[in-house]
Length: 340
Image (cartoon, rainbow, N blue to C red; front, side):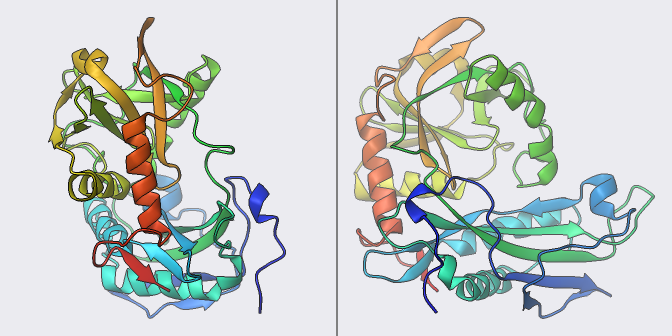
Protein backbone atom coordinates (compact mmCIF):
# COMPACT_ATOMS: atom_id res chain seq x y z
CA UNK A 1 0.00 0.00 0.00
CA UNK A 2 1.09 3.56 -0.64
CA UNK A 3 -0.02 6.98 0.43
CA UNK A 4 -3.55 8.00 -0.48
CA UNK A 5 -4.05 10.16 -3.55
CA UNK A 6 -4.54 13.41 -1.64
CA UNK A 7 -3.36 16.90 -2.52
CA UNK A 8 -1.37 17.13 0.70
CA UNK A 9 -0.15 20.66 0.07
CA UNK A 10 -3.66 22.07 -0.18
CA UNK A 11 -5.36 20.39 2.76
CA UNK A 12 -7.43 22.59 5.04
CA UNK A 13 -8.01 22.13 8.75
CA UNK A 14 -11.16 20.02 8.50
CA UNK A 15 -12.50 16.49 8.75
CA UNK A 16 -11.65 13.91 6.11
CA UNK A 17 -12.84 10.39 6.82
CA UNK A 18 -10.05 7.82 7.07
CA UNK A 19 -10.39 4.05 6.77
CA UNK A 20 -10.23 2.92 10.39
CA UNK A 21 -10.94 3.96 13.97
CA UNK A 22 -10.50 2.39 17.41
CA UNK A 23 -13.51 1.54 19.61
CA UNK A 24 -13.62 0.21 23.17
CA UNK A 25 -16.73 -0.21 25.34
CA UNK A 26 -17.11 -0.03 29.11
CA UNK A 27 -19.80 -2.30 30.54
CA UNK A 28 -20.32 -4.20 33.80
CA UNK A 29 -17.42 -2.36 35.42
CA UNK A 30 -14.68 -3.02 32.85
CA UNK A 31 -13.30 -1.92 29.51
CA UNK A 32 -13.15 -4.47 26.71
CA UNK A 33 -9.96 -4.90 24.68
CA UNK A 34 -11.19 -2.65 21.90
CA UNK A 35 -11.15 -3.18 18.14
CA UNK A 36 -10.08 -1.43 14.98
CA UNK A 37 -13.15 -0.99 12.79
CA UNK A 38 -14.05 0.56 9.47
CA UNK A 39 -17.45 1.69 10.72
CA UNK A 40 -17.48 5.43 11.42
CA UNK A 41 -21.11 5.56 12.56
CA UNK A 42 -22.21 5.66 16.20
CA UNK A 43 -25.68 4.38 17.11
CA UNK A 44 -27.06 5.73 20.41
CA UNK A 45 -30.32 5.56 22.30
CA UNK A 46 -32.22 8.85 22.24
CA UNK A 47 -31.72 9.09 26.02
CA UNK A 48 -27.96 8.44 25.97
CA UNK A 49 -26.24 10.28 28.82
CA UNK A 50 -23.93 12.20 26.48
CA UNK A 51 -26.95 13.67 24.68
CA UNK A 52 -28.76 14.63 27.87
CA UNK A 53 -25.98 15.77 30.22
CA UNK A 54 -22.89 16.28 28.03
CA UNK A 55 -20.84 13.61 29.80
CA UNK A 56 -17.97 13.59 27.33
CA UNK A 57 -14.22 14.32 27.34
CA UNK A 58 -11.71 14.36 24.51
CA UNK A 59 -8.09 14.84 23.48
CA UNK A 60 -6.19 16.03 20.43
CA UNK A 61 -2.73 15.11 19.16
CA UNK A 62 -0.96 14.56 15.86
CA UNK A 63 1.10 12.01 13.95
CA UNK A 64 3.92 13.23 11.71
CA UNK A 65 6.33 11.95 9.12
CA UNK A 66 9.81 12.92 10.27
CA UNK A 67 12.67 14.06 8.07
CA UNK A 68 14.11 10.52 8.07
CA UNK A 69 10.77 8.95 7.08
CA UNK A 70 9.50 7.64 10.42
CA UNK A 71 5.89 8.00 11.53
CA UNK A 72 5.80 9.40 15.05
CA UNK A 73 3.52 11.08 17.53
CA UNK A 74 4.34 13.66 20.19
CA UNK A 75 4.08 12.96 23.93
CA UNK A 76 0.91 10.80 23.76
CA UNK A 77 1.41 9.70 27.37
CA UNK A 78 0.56 13.25 28.49
CA UNK A 79 -2.65 13.17 26.46
CA UNK A 80 -3.53 9.86 28.08
CA UNK A 81 -2.78 11.25 31.52
CA UNK A 82 -4.91 14.32 30.88
CA UNK A 83 -7.80 12.15 29.66
CA UNK A 84 -7.57 10.19 32.90
CA UNK A 85 -7.92 13.42 34.91
CA UNK A 86 -10.77 14.65 32.73
CA UNK A 87 -12.66 11.37 33.13
CA UNK A 88 -12.22 11.37 36.91
CA UNK A 89 -13.65 14.90 37.15
CA UNK A 90 -16.80 13.93 35.22
CA UNK A 91 -17.22 10.63 37.13
CA UNK A 92 -16.33 8.54 34.11
CA UNK A 93 -14.27 5.34 34.23
CA UNK A 94 -10.58 5.98 33.58
CA UNK A 95 -9.22 4.60 30.33
CA UNK A 96 -5.63 3.81 31.40
CA UNK A 97 -2.97 5.96 29.75
CA UNK A 98 -0.91 2.89 28.82
CA UNK A 99 -3.91 1.47 26.94
CA UNK A 100 -4.51 4.95 25.49
CA UNK A 101 -1.01 5.11 23.98
CA UNK A 102 -1.35 1.61 22.49
CA UNK A 103 -4.75 2.50 21.03
CA UNK A 104 -3.27 5.63 19.44
CA UNK A 105 -0.49 3.54 17.88
CA UNK A 106 -2.96 0.96 16.53
CA UNK A 107 -5.19 3.63 15.02
CA UNK A 108 -2.33 5.46 13.32
CA UNK A 109 -0.84 2.20 11.99
CA UNK A 110 -4.21 1.25 10.54
CA UNK A 111 -4.38 4.64 8.78
CA UNK A 112 -0.71 4.82 7.78
CA UNK A 113 -1.62 5.70 4.19
CA UNK A 114 -3.24 8.90 5.46
CA UNK A 115 -0.15 10.18 7.30
CA UNK A 116 1.04 13.12 5.15
CA UNK A 117 4.57 13.01 3.76
CA UNK A 118 7.38 15.06 5.28
CA UNK A 119 7.64 18.57 3.89
CA UNK A 120 3.97 18.86 2.94
CA UNK A 121 3.12 20.94 6.01
CA UNK A 122 0.27 18.53 6.73
CA UNK A 123 -0.16 16.11 9.63
CA UNK A 124 -2.53 13.38 10.77
CA UNK A 125 -4.76 14.78 13.50
CA UNK A 126 -5.78 12.22 16.13
CA UNK A 127 -8.98 12.68 18.15
CA UNK A 128 -9.51 10.34 21.14
CA UNK A 129 -12.78 10.83 23.00
CA UNK A 130 -15.06 9.15 25.53
CA UNK A 131 -18.76 9.51 26.29
CA UNK A 132 -21.59 8.13 28.39
CA UNK A 133 -23.52 5.84 26.06
CA UNK A 134 -26.45 4.24 27.92
CA UNK A 135 -29.89 5.82 28.55
CA UNK A 136 -29.89 8.11 31.61
CA UNK A 137 -32.86 10.31 32.45
CA UNK A 138 -32.04 11.22 36.06
CA UNK A 139 -29.11 13.57 36.56
CA UNK A 140 -26.34 11.08 37.30
CA UNK A 141 -23.33 9.50 35.58
CA UNK A 142 -23.81 6.89 32.89
CA UNK A 143 -23.27 3.19 33.56
CA UNK A 144 -21.80 2.41 30.15
CA UNK A 145 -19.22 4.30 28.10
CA UNK A 146 -17.50 4.22 24.76
CA UNK A 147 -13.91 5.28 24.07
CA UNK A 148 -13.05 5.97 20.45
CA UNK A 149 -10.20 7.35 18.35
CA UNK A 150 -10.54 8.67 14.82
CA UNK A 151 -7.96 10.36 12.61
CA UNK A 152 -8.09 12.93 9.84
CA UNK A 153 -5.32 14.44 7.70
CA UNK A 154 -5.12 18.20 8.11
CA UNK A 155 -3.14 20.96 6.49
CA UNK A 156 -1.18 23.61 8.38
CA UNK A 157 -3.39 25.69 10.64
CA UNK A 158 -2.07 28.84 8.94
CA UNK A 159 -1.85 28.76 5.16
CA UNK A 160 1.18 30.74 3.99
CA UNK A 161 2.62 31.14 7.46
CA UNK A 162 1.38 32.43 10.78
CA UNK A 163 0.27 36.05 10.70
CA UNK A 164 -0.35 37.81 14.03
CA UNK A 165 -3.99 37.90 15.09
CA UNK A 166 -6.13 40.35 17.04
CA UNK A 167 -7.82 39.17 20.24
CA UNK A 168 -10.20 40.88 22.62
CA UNK A 169 -10.63 40.79 26.36
CA UNK A 170 -13.91 38.96 26.71
CA UNK A 171 -16.90 39.94 28.83
CA UNK A 172 -17.80 36.27 29.05
CA UNK A 173 -16.29 33.88 31.59
CA UNK A 174 -14.61 30.72 30.38
CA UNK A 175 -14.43 28.77 33.65
CA UNK A 176 -15.48 29.24 37.25
CA UNK A 177 -13.16 28.79 40.24
CA UNK A 178 -13.36 25.13 41.35
CA UNK A 179 -15.14 24.32 38.07
CA UNK A 180 -14.05 22.28 35.04
CA UNK A 181 -11.67 24.68 33.29
CA UNK A 182 -8.67 22.43 34.03
CA UNK A 183 -10.06 19.41 32.11
CA UNK A 184 -10.76 18.81 28.41
CA UNK A 185 -14.52 18.41 28.57
CA UNK A 186 -16.85 19.07 25.67
CA UNK A 187 -19.02 21.27 27.87
CA UNK A 188 -16.19 23.82 28.22
CA UNK A 189 -16.07 24.23 24.46
CA UNK A 190 -19.85 24.39 24.05
CA UNK A 191 -20.00 27.43 26.31
CA UNK A 192 -17.29 29.17 24.25
CA UNK A 193 -19.19 28.96 20.95
CA UNK A 194 -21.39 32.00 21.49
CA UNK A 195 -18.39 34.06 22.55
CA UNK A 196 -16.21 33.10 19.59
CA UNK A 197 -18.96 33.73 17.03
CA UNK A 198 -19.61 37.09 18.68
CA UNK A 199 -15.88 37.90 18.54
CA UNK A 200 -15.67 37.04 14.84
CA UNK A 201 -18.73 39.14 14.06
CA UNK A 202 -17.05 42.09 15.74
CA UNK A 203 -13.78 41.63 13.83
CA UNK A 204 -11.67 39.79 16.40
CA UNK A 205 -9.92 36.46 15.91
CA UNK A 206 -10.25 35.10 19.43
CA UNK A 207 -11.32 35.84 23.00
CA UNK A 208 -8.86 36.26 25.85
CA UNK A 209 -10.60 35.28 29.09
CA UNK A 210 -10.07 36.69 32.57
CA UNK A 211 -10.45 34.83 35.85
CA UNK A 212 -14.13 34.71 36.77
CA UNK A 213 -13.62 35.60 40.44
CA UNK A 214 -11.83 38.95 40.20
CA UNK A 215 -11.71 39.59 36.42
CA UNK A 216 -8.24 41.06 36.87
CA UNK A 217 -6.04 38.10 35.83
CA UNK A 218 -5.46 36.60 32.38
CA UNK A 219 -6.24 32.89 31.97
CA UNK A 220 -6.48 31.49 28.42
CA UNK A 221 -8.50 31.69 25.20
CA UNK A 222 -11.36 29.49 24.04
CA UNK A 223 -9.01 26.80 22.79
CA UNK A 224 -5.43 27.64 23.72
CA UNK A 225 -3.08 28.58 26.54
CA UNK A 226 -1.24 31.91 26.40
CA UNK A 227 2.47 32.71 26.48
CA UNK A 228 4.07 36.12 26.79
CA UNK A 229 7.62 37.30 26.11
CA UNK A 230 8.90 40.18 28.21
CA UNK A 231 11.06 42.98 26.89
CA UNK A 232 14.09 41.30 28.46
CA UNK A 233 13.27 37.94 26.80
CA UNK A 234 11.66 36.02 29.65
CA UNK A 235 8.82 33.63 28.91
CA UNK A 236 5.79 34.26 31.13
CA UNK A 237 2.70 32.07 31.15
CA UNK A 238 -0.43 32.46 33.31
CA UNK A 239 -0.87 30.06 36.22
CA UNK A 240 -4.35 29.17 37.46
CA UNK A 241 -6.26 26.12 38.69
CA UNK A 242 -8.92 26.77 36.04
CA UNK A 243 -6.56 26.71 33.03
CA UNK A 244 -6.31 23.57 30.89
CA UNK A 245 -2.76 22.14 31.26
CA UNK A 246 -1.76 22.41 27.60
CA UNK A 247 0.82 19.86 26.47
CA UNK A 248 2.11 22.32 23.88
CA UNK A 249 2.54 25.02 26.53
CA UNK A 250 4.34 22.66 28.89
CA UNK A 251 6.64 21.62 26.04
CA UNK A 252 7.36 25.25 25.11
CA UNK A 253 8.27 25.99 28.73
CA UNK A 254 10.78 23.12 28.67
CA UNK A 255 12.17 24.21 25.30
CA UNK A 256 12.58 27.78 26.55
CA UNK A 257 14.53 26.66 29.62
CA UNK A 258 16.56 23.74 28.32
CA UNK A 259 17.11 24.54 24.63
CA UNK A 260 17.12 28.34 24.52
CA UNK A 261 18.39 29.10 28.02
CA UNK A 262 15.52 31.45 28.77
CA UNK A 263 14.19 32.41 32.16
CA UNK A 264 10.60 31.21 32.60
CA UNK A 265 7.90 32.47 34.97
CA UNK A 266 4.70 30.46 35.47
CA UNK A 267 2.63 32.84 37.60
CA UNK A 268 -0.53 34.88 37.88
CA UNK A 269 -0.57 37.44 35.07
CA UNK A 270 -2.65 40.59 35.53
CA UNK A 271 -4.59 42.43 32.86
CA UNK A 272 -2.77 45.59 33.90
CA UNK A 273 0.54 44.03 32.77
CA UNK A 274 -0.40 43.57 29.12
CA UNK A 275 1.32 46.69 27.84
CA UNK A 276 4.58 45.56 29.47
CA UNK A 277 5.04 42.53 27.19
CA UNK A 278 6.94 42.46 23.89
CA UNK A 279 5.33 39.36 22.34
CA UNK A 280 2.31 37.15 22.85
CA UNK A 281 1.25 33.79 21.46
CA UNK A 282 -1.59 31.30 21.80
CA UNK A 283 -0.35 27.72 22.02
CA UNK A 284 -2.09 24.42 21.32
CA UNK A 285 -1.96 21.24 19.25
CA UNK A 286 -3.61 22.63 16.12
CA UNK A 287 -1.38 25.62 15.40
CA UNK A 288 1.48 25.03 17.89
CA UNK A 289 1.77 28.82 18.32
CA UNK A 290 -0.55 31.54 16.97
CA UNK A 291 1.16 34.94 17.30
CA UNK A 292 -0.88 37.80 18.73
CA UNK A 293 -0.20 41.30 17.43
CA UNK A 294 -2.96 43.27 19.09
CA UNK A 295 -5.14 42.90 22.19
CA UNK A 296 -8.24 45.06 22.51
CA UNK A 297 -9.63 45.76 25.97
CA UNK A 298 -13.00 47.45 25.50
CA UNK A 299 -11.74 49.93 22.92
CA UNK A 300 -8.23 50.29 24.35
CA UNK A 301 -5.77 48.85 21.84
CA UNK A 302 -2.62 47.22 23.17
CA UNK A 303 -0.26 46.76 20.23
CA UNK A 304 2.58 44.35 20.94
CA UNK A 305 6.01 45.66 19.85
CA UNK A 306 6.47 42.53 17.69
CA UNK A 307 3.81 43.99 15.38
CA UNK A 308 1.15 42.62 13.04
CA UNK A 309 3.38 41.52 10.17
CA UNK A 310 5.09 38.40 11.47
CA UNK A 311 5.67 36.22 14.52
CA UNK A 312 7.88 37.87 17.13
CA UNK A 313 11.56 36.81 17.07
CA UNK A 314 11.57 34.99 20.41
CA UNK A 315 8.23 33.30 19.77
CA UNK A 316 9.60 32.24 16.36
CA UNK A 317 12.61 30.60 18.01
CA UNK A 318 10.31 28.71 20.36
CA UNK A 319 8.07 27.64 17.48
CA UNK A 320 10.96 26.57 15.25
CA UNK A 321 12.63 24.60 18.04
CA UNK A 322 9.48 22.74 19.10
CA UNK A 323 8.39 21.92 15.54
CA UNK A 324 11.97 20.89 14.79
CA UNK A 325 11.78 18.41 17.66
CA UNK A 326 8.41 17.13 16.47
CA UNK A 327 9.62 16.64 12.91
CA UNK A 328 12.90 15.00 13.87
CA UNK A 329 15.19 17.84 12.80
CA UNK A 330 16.27 18.51 16.39
CA UNK A 331 17.06 15.86 18.99
CA UNK A 332 14.12 15.37 21.33
CA UNK A 333 14.12 14.92 25.10
CA UNK A 334 13.76 11.29 26.11
CA UNK A 335 10.20 9.99 25.71
CA UNK A 336 8.83 12.94 23.78
CA UNK A 337 8.74 11.25 20.38
CA UNK A 338 6.92 7.91 20.13
CA UNK A 339 7.55 5.97 16.94
CA UNK A 340 4.52 4.30 15.40
